Length: 137
Image 1 (tube, rainbow, N blue to C red):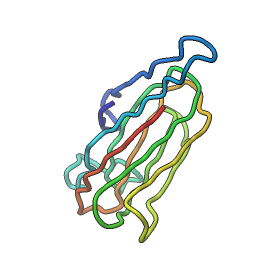
Image 2 (cartoon, rainbow, N blue to C red):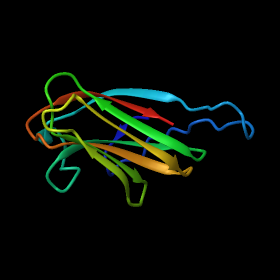
Image 3 (tube, rainbow, N blue to C red):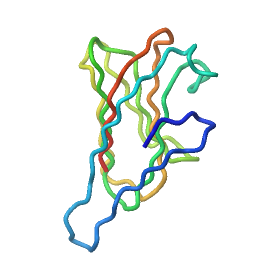
């Protein structure tokens, strides 16, 4: 899984499926290190016509939970994480709490096998924000 711009071809990652009903879970954890750059480093705003973001596309090959954790160093930041069905609607959105920990985490317990898009949005147009995004499926 790699970041993609909203208009470039999607980077796709397919996770393995269980070999048989009742087989041990094949869920994997994928950490991704990156950054949301200052808005002026992108050719155009990625979200709401005003904000910078990094986009990560992935595919799942079986029904199951999707867990997303975003962390960064330092003080609280104005960040949000959005999970979409590719070409479709918003499945989940979470916002960093003001004054809270340097972390956003959520679990969607039952998601179908499909193509998905994670979007990390920075509401701080002047800042580069290094981050680690962990996807577990």
